[in-house]
Length: 411
Image 1 (cartoon, rainbow, N blue to C red):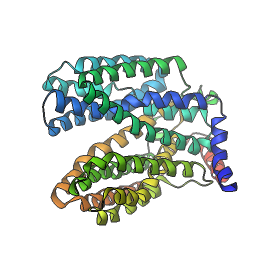
Image 2 (cartoon, rainbow, N blue to C red):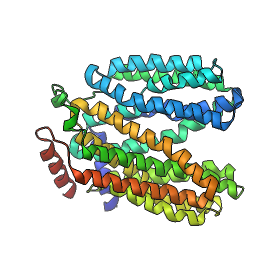
Image 3 (tube, rainbow, N blue to C red):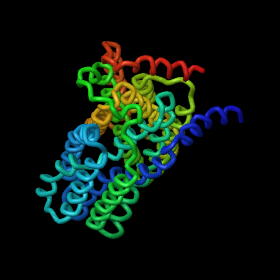
Image 4 (tube, helix red, strand yellow):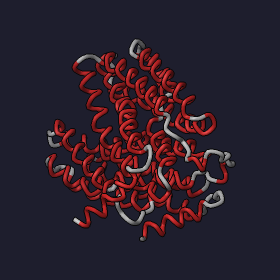
């Protein structure tokens, strides 16, 4: 009982902070459209336009490139003009894409997917930036753990809702619903208007990028890319492994198990007294995935259980990455920095799927798990080397605050 009290108390303190309790459900709902995007596009290309999964993959890749380009641009817009101007642009732009995309032939959809990605509302980044403004430095790890848990739940809900609507009604109805959900999310965020900076940060001027975009930040971005290679590579290989044993219909059940494992790991990590570096968590997550390849021919329930250890580290790894980005970046550039972090995640997701897919096609599902894990370990090692190579020049007080946080974690 004492253990439970110690672990839950940090969450109680975070939820008691002004604005946090109201922000979390708003961000949960605002992020559901983002998690459904890929599924809606894939189903529309395959079921309505009658093209193959390769063609659907091309549309998804183009949209992903747009998202990677747009995230730091929108973050920079928030830093310079504030949240509401960015919301107006992205809400109108993304809604227009979804309403028009359903009427386009495949070449038109492929051509406009880039702009749809660039103009996508960065709900993930907005939530992280708002938490950095609302939560003191020494409590952000717990806040970002809550955020990661929320994201896990949205990834269970969003794609499932997309499949239900697209298959039971039509993909056009799914696209209209997605556009409507974007308008609702953007309008709600516009009204709520969560702060992007704390009160004491409001007057801070944006410093030159070279003062914060240095080896430590690049190392954190590389860690994010590696973590997503592991996660997306796992998803691809799970489908291949289950198909190999004739149990592909249990993919959803395996996904739920690993999402619950990730959320559980996030809860534990958020209540810990000490932080762990993102590179160390990402490397361990990759290492634990490598031997899973030995069980690639196992039944679905055993494969799900064997995947639990590596997925226990999923939410903690993402939490540590987002927390580190927010610590390194000055408040006046936090939106852009978080945007670059989102681009790093996007790059890992975009590269991990096809690369691990090629390994699976040529060597089998067992090697797919191993390749994803090894890729994550290698990128974590690169990230660790970058972080040790140097650190960005910090604004006055940053080093002292980080040091104070480390002492607080040790108490």
